[in-house]
Image (cartoon, rainbow over all chains, first blue to last red; front, side, top):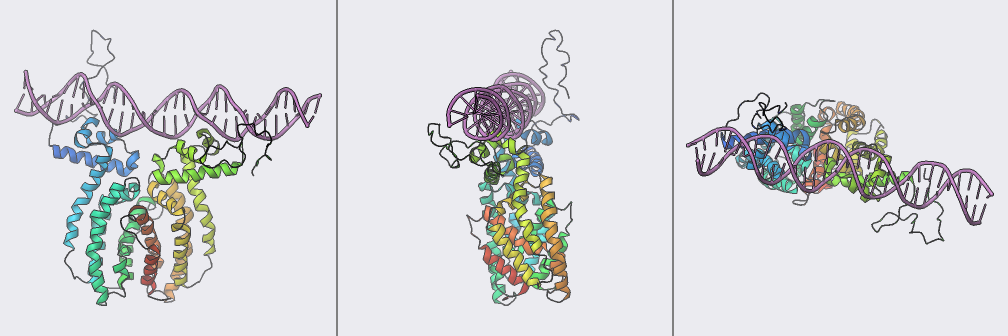
Length: 228
Length: 228
DNA sequence: GTATTATGACTGACTGGTCAGTCAATACAC
DNA sequence: GTGTATTGACTGACCAGTCAGTCATAATAC
């Protein structure tokens, strides 16, 4: 790139260079000035998702986040207090949209099979099929080092899902819709294969692909018996 | 191995201390000189397990590993080429012992239920019940950044288990021991809850404990129906 | 046995590089 | 012009990896 020579600072060529403005990145699309602050924030979060996903929390460099967002490093600090806040806000911003969908499930008293199939389809569509799966992976990956993230995710997502789903499954068990109350006691068993899918795709898919939708179908089959 | 301890130069207590064996422990016991190379290596691996487990690959500092192992930083480099080699050797050293146990399973033609219960019991005992669970977590946690680790684990552990287990399950399905061939096609469904258990314990147990053995029992119940 | 020399395992201060976070200078909006 | 958003060179901390030096032990000499 070469901050290259100032137009020639000329005369006092003496200066090293002190390259002022040029800046514009290679393709230098002129920056918009204070375009839309909300857009800028979003651009930074987008770039952060990319970098954190690819390199993990410690491995990600804010210089790269800035470059990818088309922004100077200092700008990040106008929107986020520090690297950790950026990470936490990223997780929050990805998780929030699904929180609404959850309440949705509140329609009590759908049949257990419908509930479970609904949960798994939502999981495949809204998580496995989107960047959200990377966020889930990040939570597992960095959760030990960031208890705040794990706590947040448990409180805002997991505890809520369990609270909604358990009573429905309990009733279904009592009603004889389920062989027993195993699923009511351990709803974790329902999405366990979803977790496996996320990890498998991230780590082993290139050595041995896994047909996730088919596996989920097999899982439902085991839980409820063949066909619908 | 073990150039082992010189018989104790004793008498001349005068020496700073030249504490022969003791060493370990906090209080600064004088270093043994070339004590047992195999022991030293093990001490470093132990310390590395602790530090990598607690802080992840990037977060772990070799200064701390050295301190914990009761060794100078330079000594680590006498036993391992660099940080990455230390990490890989750690994973290998933890995984190796179980590889033997695997072949063990080769006894073809045990009933499917026995196979599955055996697998899950082994998992609970040999992985969840030991530091090995932290290694599995590290593999998931760092696997994306260290494809070599993921590849190694897939090749040496996962692929082998699948190769052993699939034919048995297939036969069991044909024999009508299983409702269908779901488990033969996706044996991942068998240990999925084990993975959930590892992650739950690491991230959420402090907010909401999970009775893992009971969950595993419920899982077996779902796969095969109640009682034995 | 004791004295002397040789060996190499071990040490830890140091180097070179990296990167989160800062802030004076700059560019723009008005 | 004034005020504000943005920039990016810079700083300070941190850490993987190095290497000149130390010293317990071993080898050899006596």
